[in-house]
Image 1 (tube, rainbow, N blue to C red):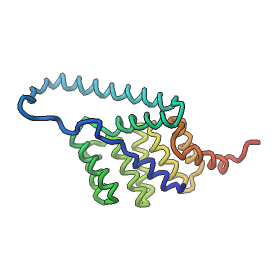
Image 2 (cartoon, rainbow, N blue to C red):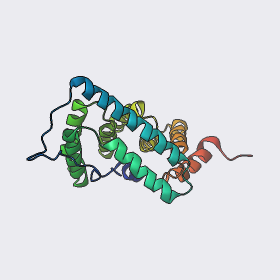
Image 3 (cartoon, helix red, strand yellow):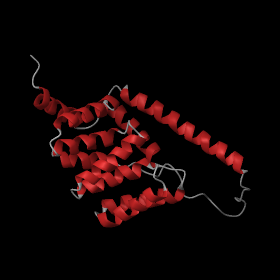
Image 4 (cartoon, helix red, strand yellow):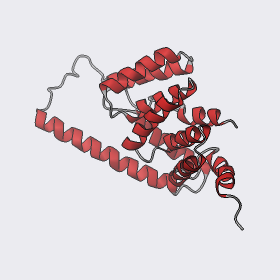
Length: 210
C-alpha cells in the first residue's frame, strides 16, 4: 500500500457527529435563564476536566485492547471525543468541511478549516484535517507544520503520528519516520498498516538482528 493512501485513509477516518445534537432544541417552554458567569466558568472547567479524564481512560484502554475489533471500537470513541466541541457553530463548520472533503472540493474545505482554526486554534482535529488536505495537495511542509501543532496539543494522536511518519519517510528522513511510527504503535498497537510499514522500515534503517 502506498504511503499516500495510508496517510489519507488514517486521517480521513473522521468521527461522526451523529452521537451528539449539533443545535440546542428551542421552542415554547424550553427557554432557560442563563446561569451566572462564575457558574458558567465552573461548568466549563468541569467539562474540560471530564474530557481529559475520558481521553486518558480511552487511550489506556486502546493500548491494552486484546484484539483489533475492540481497538477499532475504542478508536471511534477517541475520534468522536476529539472531534466534537462545545461550540455548535464549529461542529457545523466541521461537518461542512468533511462533506466538501468527501466531494473532493479541497479549496472550499481548506477555507472552512482555515476559518475553524482562526475561531479556535485549540481545536486539534481541525489542524489534523488541514494537515491531510495539505498532504493531498502535495504540500508536505505545510502538512508537517500542521501535524506538529496537532501533536503539541495532543501527543497521543496516533493518526497524526502515523501521518508524520509517512511525510518524514517521503522526504528521506527514515530514522525519524521510524521513531514516529513506533510512537504511533505504542499508543495504538492495532493501528492499521503501520506495524507492517514499521517492520520493513526497521530492516532498512537498523538492519537485521544478528
